[in-house]
Image (cartoon, rainbow, N blue to C red):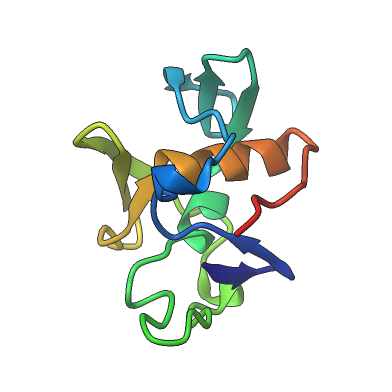
Length: 128
């Protein structure tokens, strides 16, 4: 887990033995007006802009692997950063390529769902 804006969000998929109730079934992706529109199997739709995705990266350059402390300063990310590619990784994550050259983070479906819930005003963070 990593601290993000005073909340905690998942770095990796939750162990199935913990009984997570987060719906991570992605039903669709498409270009929205300002970013990527995610549609989830339970009907939740939310658009995430490229800068939000970039700031939410959980790779080792952006988040300490040992402490979970965020290393990336959001003020260093340009307001106009673009998403240049979104590539599936297995059945559990996406790799995002950004116009600033960053491409090392994996965005798990659980992390994307959590970000979408925040964007849709359902700001509860998942329990540990």
